[in-house]
Each structure stands twice: as structure tokens, then as C-alpha cells.
Image 1 (tube, rainbow over the protein chains, first blue to last red):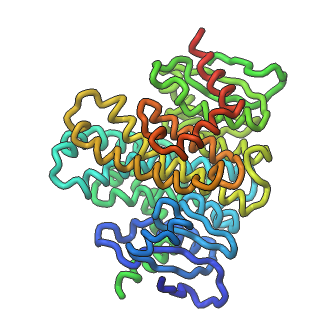
Image 2: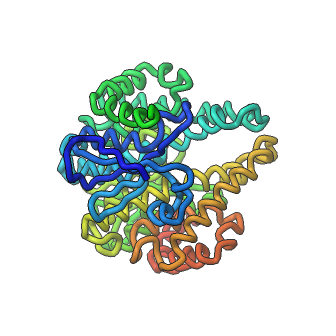
Image 3: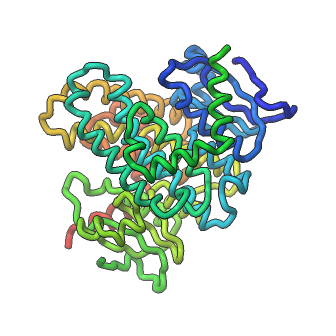
Length: 223
Length: 223
């Protein structure tokens, strides 16, 4: 594994695993980006361990990440996987990502799960058809229903965002997850078709921590 | 909404929303079951608000649950949705569901997200084909790849469970979510095909709180 010190602070014990290489269409979308974003918002320094397909399939990596996915996150003695859980762990360390009040924290986690369990599966079903199914007959037949589900979810999200800037009454880690999910359909006009949602995504993307996270993620592939 | 007092304790302020009616194939699988299970493990009393399609589509319900799904959970002044977030909120109130140590809590949340973000989407893609697609040509063409993904996830889970009784080193709320996800494919032999996973699901299902939750859920439909 290649280790890159992403910040100048020495002695950091936070290590994020990311892919050494990604095809063009996946750049900016891999799940290490949302964790980088959370770390930037929190002002926490971290190192990056870059892995390739060989490490990903290794028993050693599977011991850390049973599904062979990215990212894995190490914070001192603690090793976590699942971007939602990692983002939550980071958010607990920073008022920039989550209020301190237990009720507000529970509401924040509600929207984190909403992003990853109620919206992401619908969105990724469409991505799978559009980016991976090629000319398969099943994909052509299936796409309208999958698209309709995404449009419904986006309309529901728009209604939630109609009278507020962020999912909750302030920016939280849930917005990082939701914006990251919305980015998956950047090959479509689906977000643009919903003005409220479009403005929300622009608002999230305009945050300096968001750009920094993407820039650091894609800088890896320039080497 | 019909209110049912599920326990004899008076003055409970916990209210769970569930469906008044469900078709046979969905009984025992709706997401209120996992929350009922968590509440039973925690020994917390609760009331149930039963809703039908009309309430589900209402503006009032959408204000509580933007995607019109079940369950919604009210704990005093706090209203939550997303079964993962509700289960986490309940787990924070009971040592029976989660250790107190912050690192162990973060690991528990990792497995909660694993259940709902890494395993459930694959499982529900298969359920959608098997239970809802009928004789559609796309479903026939698509099923082998969807099935293969579920089998891969189940094999990965089996590897994780090979040397332990539960996902972590003790029973936690993450097992409630994972077992609930595994139940979705009760129409197949996929869990039975993995002896370790089969034993795990049996172990989870054998817990008195698990049976009580399902019994209370299905009792609704007897009326």
C-alpha cells in the first residue's frame, strides 16, 4: 500500500483507504470522497492508503472490510468500514458536522440512513443500467420503472428541501451523504430537473471542503 | 389512526407507526418488525399507530416521513424515521442492544450500515424480481446476475460469522437489522445454502424478543 500524507500535520493516526486507480466515469464518485469531505469539514488531518484490485481481494483486506469495498478508515486503534458509519464517527468529533443535542443527533442519523437506504439504492439501480448494462435488452425494458423511482425520490427530497437550505435546520454530515448520492446521476439531467434539488446540490458542492475532498481524490489519478 | 396499547404499562410516550393491512407475502417483513424487535430486546413499552394507504399518502404523514414509508417512531417530543436510525436511537437506551464504549458503538453502527447499505439493496433487488416482476422478460434475463450478487454477499457474511455467534463479539442491534434483511429471501433456499449463515439466522430468530415482535406485528392482521 502507498501512503500519502494529505496534510502537513505530522503524527496523524487517521488513515483512509482509497483506490489507486479508477476509470474516468467513477472518478469523484467513489465512497472515499464523502469521508474526505467530512474530514475536511471537521478540519481533521488524515493519511491515505491507496490500494489496487490485488490488495482489495486479499485476505488481509477482507479482514478489515468483509465485502472488499472502499473505504476502510482507521482512527488510532479503531478500524471502521461503511462510509455512513465512518462519516458518523467523524461527525461525533466535530460540531461542524452535527449538533451536540442527542435529539438533533438522532435526526441527523435519520437523514444519513435516508440518504444511504432510501435514496442511494434507487439511484444506483439507474447507474447500473446507464453505465454498466450496455445494450442489454433487460436494461431497456427495465429502465422506465427504475427512472420513475428515482424521479419520485427526487421529488420527495425537493419537498423536504423546499423551505430550508439543508436537510436539517443547518448543514450536517447528512448533507454530505445526500449530496454524494445525488452526484451519482451526474450523467443525467435528473437533478437539474428539480430546481430546489439542483440549488441544494450546488450549495453543498460550493463548500470549500467539498471541492478540497474531490481535488484530493482525483489528484491520486494524476500520478 | 388506530392506537393499540401493545403492553400494559400506562403512560408510554413511544409510538410506532405500522400498516393496518399487508398482503400475505409481506407479513413479517415490514420494517416496523425490526423496530418492535429492538424495543422488545430493550424491554421498552410502546404503542402502535396503524395506518392505511390513505394516511400514508397524506400531507400530514409526509411531514413526518418524506418518502411515505413505514415506520415512523415517536419518542416523546422526538420524531424519527428510517428503521436504521430508529433502531440506533433505541439501542442507545439499552445495554442489551449496544455496548457503551464509543469504539464498540462505532463498530456496531458499521454493521448496521453494512446490513442496510451493503446487503439489503442486493437482497431487495432479488425480491423485486421474484415477488413483483411476474413473467417480465427483463426479470428473467437479469435474475442470474442479481442472484449472484446476493450469493456473494451471503458468502462474505458467512466468512465474517465463521468464528463468532453474532456480527460483533456479542448480540447487538446490528444483528436485528441483518437478520431482518436475511428474512427477505425466505422464499428461497439462499440462507439455507450457507450453513453458517443459516445457523446465525436461526440463532437470531430464536430470541424471545424476535418471536414477540413478529407475533405482535402479525396479530394486527388477525382483526
